[in-house]
Length: 258
Length: 207
Image (cartoon, rainbow over all chains, first blue to last red; front, side, top):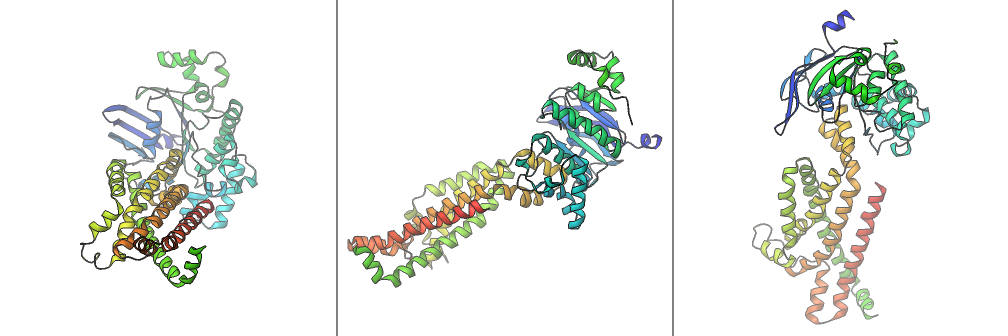
């Protein structure tokens, strides 16, 4: 991990983002190490999603620099950059007119993979995310919410990106399905060791999945803590979160099982 | 049924005028699609321009058709051949439903789908051709359908400037005060409109 620490997978340097005169993000400095799951925690409007979109350049910073694998985003080819980063959003955004197979295989296809290689990759990914092989021929509207988000994750993993951006991916799911997907996410992460930036407003989810938690408020980074540190933090906002989520958080904290 | 006997007796001319009519409608719809669909896509992606473009198309729609045919008569090259002129006028009328529906169709694509596509690294043209257009196609086609039906009706007026089509019978019948002749133009025109409506509707469901 020493080597990884010297060149972070993602780095925000003095990043500010303004839109129509409003400061959405300011003085944002953060490093995400490769292989870790960094959770951005905060309430709505705190700048979590904006930070995430700066990584794959769906947004460009007003000032400052976002670097991915040591290269400034402003110098990178935006299409190449995005194809090297998996992106999962709450509304999933599966293409409704494509089968599951075409949804998952889209980036490999436009990257010019051979058809049989794509088919094999799709089957491999369906298995990875816990879906039956025959799901491949179905359409998104024929799937449940949980299945759809599994396809969303499989699609993000299709071209084997080193980085995964997840914007409240389990936020719209029922509690049981969410619990299932969180557990599978941990198992998956033990195997794949992706660099993950995970946005949520759910402290329980943050504690469970994150190796570190970056707490955000009103466009600023308040503090970055490990789950265990978070629970003992004297920071007023962190303490407020812990109080709001109540009892039983101790057992949820990710203690680095891998 | 005098009308049908009349049509049967003049079936050669009925057929000829029907084909002329189809030609006017076909070319004008084609041109309107070639202009209207790209324009609709452009204003869907640049919302700043949607008001001026839709307003212009709206204004064109409000010009009485006979007046528009008249206005265009002195235009060089176009005025020389009345069918060119009729095709241009019909194209202008067909623009509004096609632009508006293309705009609505593209804007109606779930933003999450577009964001996911862009985030995955689709280029803007891949996004357009693989995601936005396929998802908007039925709305766009229903605009084309409206345009075709309007054009079939309007094209009858093209006969007033000598562009031919089924309007020939209608105007001739009006001059002769002979219902049979009027209906010999009106009935095939109505059938054309229905067939076109049904045909594009069928295509719409298939896609």
